Length: 313
Image 1 (tube, rainbow, N blue to C red):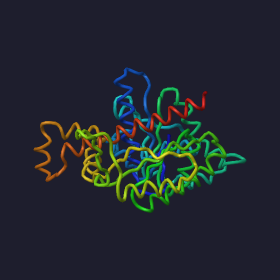
Image 2 (cartoon, one colour):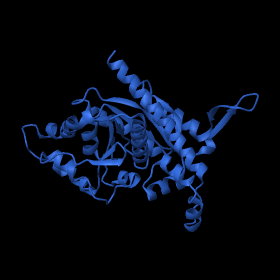
Image 3 (cartoon, rainbow, N blue to C red):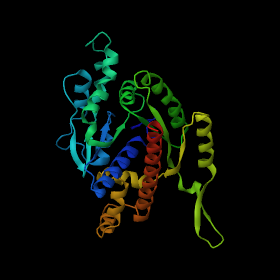
């Protein structure tokens, strides 16, 4: 599964980190021998910040991806950044990928290069239940490399117009990738970074919460995105990841995903830590973000399994 939008700041890295960590935790809890692999194809390397492995032993800043593309080596996988969660690190070295793709190692060099990551992943795939790839914005060669290797595409879209335009740009990636990977399938759109004030709880006559209603800007954006998607059949997931600047900042600072930060803020030492560093993050806000991502992950995986069942029916 690749996480793709041509706009920066749409939530791709946060989504990749959180879903990867949740899936690995679920496998670990279930006693499964399978693993999860998260691949960072962004030169910014922010997945390493979110999962806490950036700058630590094994972080090659994307060199192994270059090696795969150039045919000089295999993927370098950092094992167990979480129990049963492995990572292929990204970083600034990935900026060389465009120049690498000009190489002439065969009669049809671009085809060979575009298939290189897919072939490298095929070698390790039996070990993994899920493989997720965090794609960069506006770097077509890296996006195509990921899309040729993927089965599904998850598209996070945030609240600004640029992210919707980035959604439209995803179709260009599909056009190139499906020539070599006709099985590539859009999984759906995840609404990311919207204000919680645009969600209203719906209660029954006894005052019990029975649902949530979208209002204002959020409802408007969902309609706009639906119009862009038209009759493509690509769903917009019901769960919305709401904007929580403090949560996102602390996750990246501590190298933790939402659920882990929620556990941290609920711990006995958090109030002292928060006071010392003048933090206003509450355990409630971290827990809300964790619950939203958990619900989104459940929706996303359900959709993937449904598509898989249809394909093998």
